[in-house]
Image 1 (cartoon, rainbow, N blue to C red):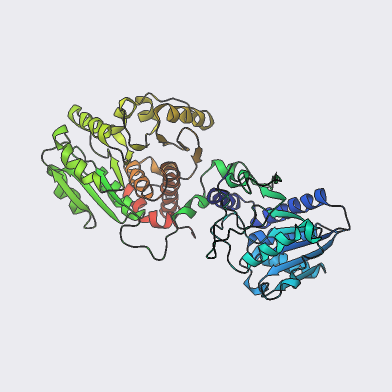
Image 2: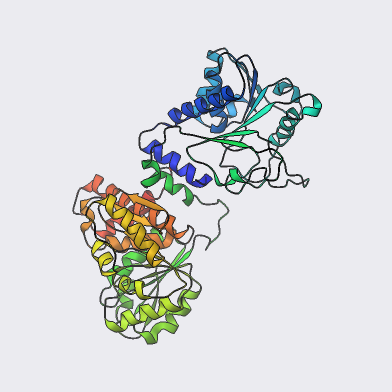
Length: 500
């Protein structure tokens, strides 16, 4: 099954792989038409009630495949308000094909113009999977009108086919939300034709009804690669609410430094560029001034000494308590007291953390309630007891098994990054050989940390891998090889742009 948000991402990834959205719409229209032909014989009257988005566009395309039927297409609203170019092109094609297609500017005031009364089949293409909450007008009134066409006692018994999901039903939960009047209104579909994969909510749609709803999952040509490989669609979840306030996009604590000063600074600066609202660095006092000197945007908290030790943990826990994500490991080193401190921190921590570098080696032996994203390269993975495989396809399944075994999300860095939480699996192909330079892993850890403030850990790891590699590709495209890790940081905002 696939959620509505993931479906939108996969759709965008398919387009990036060279499968045009218009081609997918054509295939979806063909699938709708097949469902109609399965339901009624040629000559039957078919009314397609369409919204102004791509759900409606799918139905516009379907109408062209229904020669031999009495087809009426009704658009809710004015044609100039159709929201996408491909849907508008399919609307214009109806006129060229001389198919009965009318816009109904005010379907609440002009219900008869919907042409529902004598329909044998009504196709509900008002709203798609990306819409949730109670139906608004005019869709709310139209849904009630469609319900009347299925009332056999009123001498009207049309079959209702919903496109992707019945309008008013949440595609992820199957719930029908109550409106301001307290009523729960949705189109009472008899059949649903949904695309690419089943939606979780369809199994529960209209649960408790006397009649079951037949669901057809139609293959519309989205390649498996659009789900497996990260792509621009994965960035869609990063869109911000225009009414956002300070802190809504997360606070990150980077715990690192001592033997190294650059690593925690790279991670912290990357977290800021990836969208965190506030980033703090906890590091030994011996390097705190140097870390602060890299950027005035960082808040630096020094603790006594030259390395992290167990007696510093009360201070670290206090700093971590109010943060959304802790990035643990960049530049910490592998001194025995430091690794002991990492282990004891994780044993008592129950928040989200990105674990990187030397800190990774303690993870397999720690019992923790924390939600971890581990970011090893292949050598660090083997040091954790993980698998070794040269070919990425073999490595992918082995990483999935290892993630399931240790109970944490793994982001294994390589020419092809492999991300798994033990269930889901994603592979990232962005990045280039110039990124073998030191420090790019620290940038990745900070990027994932920032994104994990607002996304679930698996998704944060996948997006972070994609964005980090994309930033590296942008640098090389402009300047060639010879990049340094700080070059990536400056390109991260561009790499996470959803419209780039």
